[in-house]
Length: 486
Image 1 (tube, rainbow, N blue to C red):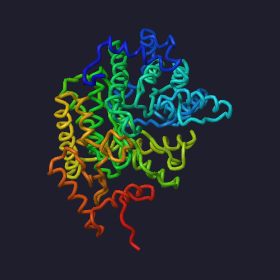
Image 2 (cartoon, rainbow, N blue to C red):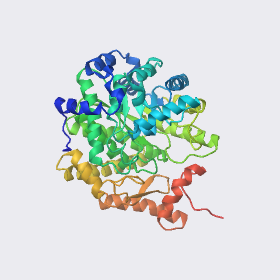
Image 3 (cartoon, rainbow, N blue to C red):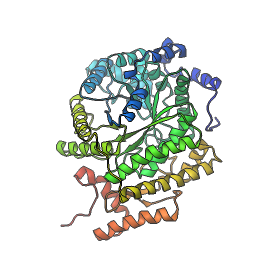
Image 4 (cartoon, rainbow, N blue to C red):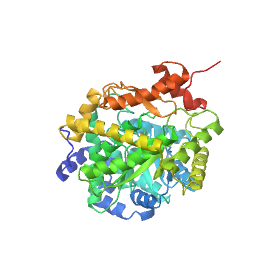
């Protein structure tokens, strides 16, 4: 395998496709014939097309809502989707189970069987590969809004084939964002290659006049991820997807907690993604943004959790995010019921509707955050292209190998995992340990100055203890992990 950021030829794609479809018996379904799949997708009505609805939402300056949800059995999954749709979801997910995410289809099959025997879901999602194209078609047929597969799969090739052939017009993930936060041993070169296939499949459909959305996973590890790290990876995955022919891309970001920093991040996510796409010649890609409600530890108290959800909804709307991924008041307890999931949707929708006409005004603080994000992203991407001799795919693999770009708290052994984040005195996420990040001294000094301001206010040194305190703070009802004063 020679990894490079170059659009696959149709011959290369079709040759690999023969092998991909052999991975599980559902891959032999005649509905997966590309001519048949093209007809299926062309028959999807506009109101069920994810890409078209996102374009409409952005033009209307609306923040649309999408939950996470999925269960093992088809009938129950359809009922779950209908319940969330009725609660006000503008887009529906189908969260895929963990066995499918790891391509362990036989174990997923056993999970379906036991779930049928016990009449309850014993999988933490919908095993779309095992159910196959027809079942996925049934899900779409029984709802009135677009469907997306949300998962966490380093190798989602067969899954992508099945969901798109069923008429699902969005797939979340990417070679970086669905590897480093989810897997330990899978190389970046392999996962980027696998996701080039997924994007080339979408490119094939685009060549046949079908709009399909792709969405890199913005929150990454979900714990104090510095905005510039998340944005840089989102831009990389957008560029890799665009090279394979993707025309509709949603880049994401997970709430950090300081409202001004989060608003700045959403603004720069949209602005910089568009800039880099145009810089490298992708002039016909439509970009939208998605804001993920808090991805870290949630308060156990239901009312406190609802407050956190409401705050996130306020930030998403004031920032002008096109879409928001919702959480539930039972986030710290376990897999939510459909009823509690619906409460999260309704609480979020109330806030976004109240703030529909409002945006955060420009300010010195907002400008400063935007400029720092721009400087940091530019440093990282310039170095990545340099390492790859202007090949983004090769440069990305090399950059993670040496730590030029890094992700905090990632389980993967294919990233250095040397950077440590912590909050400053305003609750913005800064970097305490830089590892080998390709930042200038000016940028590093800015981060250390901000952390020192907090240290002075708290009467303690800048240490890893700040990171530890901040990780647990929100679940205890605070944004910043201040030391306890007796």
